[in-house]
Image (cartoon, rainbow, N blue to C red; front, side, top):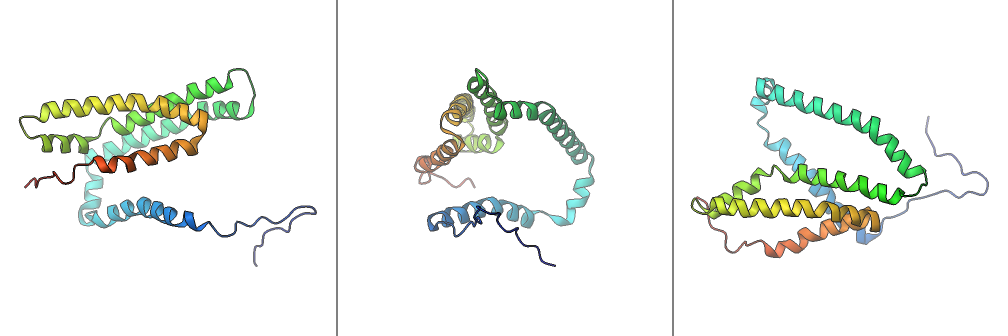
Length: 194
């Protein structure tokens, strides 16, 4: 038994996706590699011999339990409160709808940014290592201040950009900034830490 798409009704035409534009293939392949490569590396670098014993240890079980509980509660709150709000904002026209959309989007973007930036231990470690023992406190203070100022400024601006220009423009701009920052990374001045 084969499943086939239903034939178009009278007056309709069949919709075919066709070939993707060639200009999109290379960035799409690169994006797929960047998304899949960390997962493959994680699987290959995991010490599978001690994995199950570590997974059964008390600290890991507590951490996994807390993560599961937090995730479950988050999903429940989002379903109970977020779904009706999303439906209202998407389906009902009312005065102040745009303002409410912006007022809802900005805190969500702020929350997502703060959660992803606040506990960046790798950046703190790298700053302290590069600054050395005598300057690490000042370097960490400067890095922390700059990071939190940026984390405070970007979300409202990103929310405003999403509201005014759409998600595509916001994501394009978010992808452009790291490319612009590549030239600022001081690769030539790096020293061996050993």
